[in-house]
Amino acid sequence: MRGLLVAMLILALPDALEADCAGAQKLVDQAFALEVRDRVALLESAARECPTFGTLEALGESYQAREEWDGAERSYAQAGGHLALQPGSEREHQQALLLYRSAQIARRRGQLCRAVAQFGEAARRFSGQELDQARAEMQQAESEWTAHGLTAADIQCSLGTQLQAHKDYCDGEGCRLFHDASVDVPVQFATDSAELSAQAAEQVAALARGAAPFVAQGYGLEITGHTDKRGSREHNYRLSVNRAHSVATSLAASLRLPFERIRIVGKGSDEPKYPEDTPEAERLNRRVEVVLLPAAAGRAAGARAAAGASGAAATKGFSLISAQEYAQLKSTPQSAQAEVPEVKSLDLNAPQIIIEAPDARADVRPPLRLDVRFKPAADAAIDVASFQVIYKFGIIRKDITDRIRPFVTLSAAGVIGSSTSAIPAGEHTLIIRIRDSLNRIGEQMVTFRVAAT
Image (cartoon, rainbow, N blue to C red):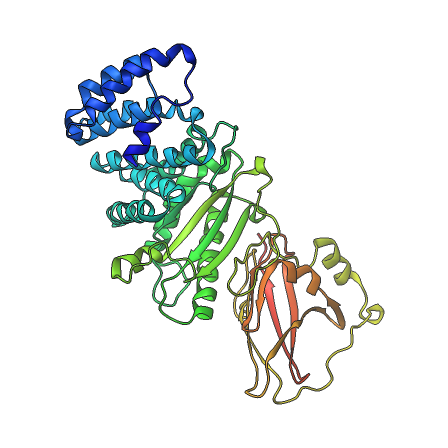
């Protein structure tokens, strides 16, 4: 990599500078015959004569070897001003190199928030051994940073650092944003639980305070739950969605953020941040990732088709019934109500439907969480395409499957998702149906009450 930098020192320069740069190149050659920490004087002279990316980056590295952090950061910042001269693929690598060097300095200075964010930015641009090294250093920094939870200032620092990196290294000409700004928050749940403990609630409250300035600027939030690899894939996926839902519900209430601007995602154990099989890697993999969704890019949390059991359960929120429809149902005489035919008889070997949520035992506050499991008999499989949801009011039966299916994750194991915040207060009844491969129909009904807000 060093030979490449030396070779690039005089590339893409105007003809008028060639003489000066030829002299500077001699100084660079002399500098590279010395130990890294002893190169400062020669590289300073070369940079004054011919300030190129390679010279300035090498100067920063020499300062860094001497632990002269201000000089190193100044040199890296100046090198960043010459990124536009680099071709596309080389430019991306140089971006990664500057971010990686800056992250190392930030960690040595105890600025762990900035270090983690910049290591992450570098890792997204690196490959091969450089990626492995950046990821290893990021894990060490993140372990120190998250050991006692994150404060609101930590969260603002992490998100702000990434947004600034996008501005610094993306000038609109041949560059691309690698990802939306995000922060991994160590929300600690009890084993196999999605309920916020007192400690978890305190961490989510800090998250709300940290995210508030960005929400005020118009950003939406994507909340992604991740688990470690203990347990089955399907179980972990369901648990991750439920945990993301708990965090999202708390954030929506704290920030007074419409649920339409929140997207809920569950990844289970499919996307570990660190692949190592160690207790610390597992701790860091159990996380809730919060991503800023920029409204200006058309990324406000909207509907996306569910991507199956291994995909992201991204949701604007499904709808059950509008306030106008509900008022009309309440005012319609039972004798005038039309009826959707019911299933007249159910086979004892039909699929079982277990409704985990909504909870019929307690008042529900929007958004409504739908969490249903399917359990077929041993001789059959679930026919996912047969999933059906009926809204029941008196003798009325209204098929609302099309209102729900695009916004939930549906698989042979069950269905999971969240509604919008617009559900009329009052009593509601849903009938859920599923068929198996032997054409036997399972049906389950749940009645719940939505509390007035």
